[in-house]
Image 1 (spheres, rainbow, N blue to C red):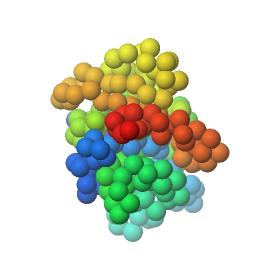
Image 2: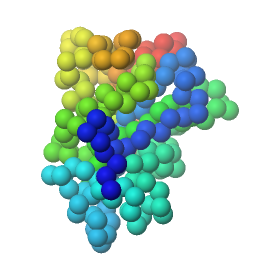
Image 3: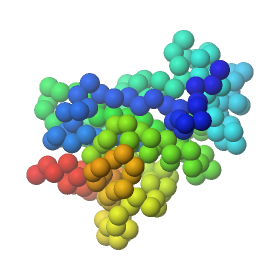
Length: 221
């Protein structure tokens, strides 16, 4: 049974922290990762779920043998214990009170809307559907700031007609730009792009620059 409908382009249901509305410095933050992957090649469903021709894992949303009865589309809620997310949270934690869990102040999902067959995310995995799913999530969650991980999924967002100043992308070295005019969203959204936290070397090499732009987006001195 598919969980998709003709109106709903999104498969993965975003994680929304318990204090998302409070946000960071009063701003709601959506963290956008790249993709979820599956390497269980011995699974009967593997080829279908990870096909980057079909690009649809929803057929086995309810019967994945690795999910212990949970739905595949709930994957965003399972991520905080992963090393990659811990790396990101550690940096984010610097911007809020020590006793508050930074992950509870943000929402999170991945851009690609099916399970990919490799740990890395490649452009051939992307489709227009993913961008439409992203817009669907933005409409629902109304973020003030979107943090985009990596140099693959940033392209369709950076090149979209909602970017109000293409020069800003160039002037900031691709770290920061703004979106405006998204239907049902009546405010300007700041996008901050960083290296994917799985790329440890580049993540820490770049961290000061990224955090500077993130502070700017969040209006933190």
